[in-house]
Length: 498
Image (cartoon, rainbow, N blue to C red):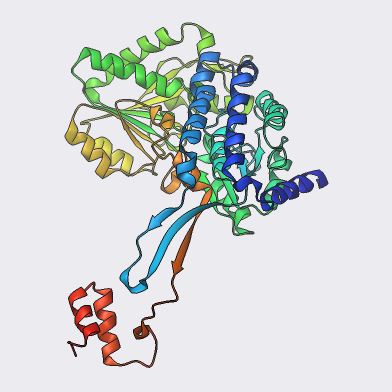
């Protein structure tokens, strides 16, 4: 692993040279990344199809187009984000000016994912418990570059075509001394984690990543060097569907639920819908609408992705093999072992203690849980680990407030699903067991920056009340200053107040 060590040292040297700090370097790298995305579009489509069976339109919607949008957003905001921000200084420090200057952290390590291997949303870990294929790819690279860092990117071997694409193309477009790709398997990931980094960006998903255990593995490795970490641990993201009276509202809801569950990589997405909560009286209508929409969307099998690899495929089969779960299937349930294809599957009221309801599904299985009244959904969600996202379909403003105030999650989206991920103006990240740290747009810049406080004073004016020897008059000065009692301060200065 001498080559790996030398490459990491080159990254450190590139950062220490100072060139990544300049606006020119950052802007040039962003433009180069944009050129990569635009010129290599067909190659990206081909890689994503080989790895995941993604249709090129889905690939553009979820990965290529997202990157184009994010890069342009960063280019537009770069100069303002880099600019020092004036700070308000208290009277006690007069005459003083203050500002906050964002500076790059240094050399950052990013692990890319297999299910969104170009843009990136989440991934899984190896059975050994070692974080093998996790994190994001070019989306956090945008933030790291914008903030002026040197970047190490580890692609996922579970998406070999996409990993090879990144390894082949990034050196052709970006500064190869300051942005490096480290392809390979678990061993490469382990070796990278042994090095000192200034930040580790790690996003996980799948069965194991839904628990804090994987997060502890990453933080343990980072703790050796006191390295800060961004963790997105996913979780079971619910969708709550209120009883909608309008037929049009019902149909739109069904389309958005289907797109939010099966649209992103056949359900293999950390922000994808995991289960659905609905009132008993509305359940049959919802099931019928979902069936109809699924048939409409996925009549052509090429419109839905495949399961990424056999291990994950077998895990999903096992979820349905449990007798109490199998008996709850109301749609789908079939699969093709050779093609690793899995039919969109709906379960109605499976046991709450079944694995399908206790672990993140991370696949094309949708459990529907019925409730006596929709307001009970708030307690249902609150009693479980905090999810990365909550989706709610309702026209009731009071219920919206109840969800916002009565639950905790990385985000809440009303009357749609997944769409919040595409909004650069909103932070994306988890809370509690769904992770910590945030990114997207300016939030990515902030994640990979340190806000350094700068204070500048004059030597011309000196307040002696801050120095010993102490007396009661000095205490009065301090009280007046700290309590913003300007009248008392003025009287003290004029000698009119004892």
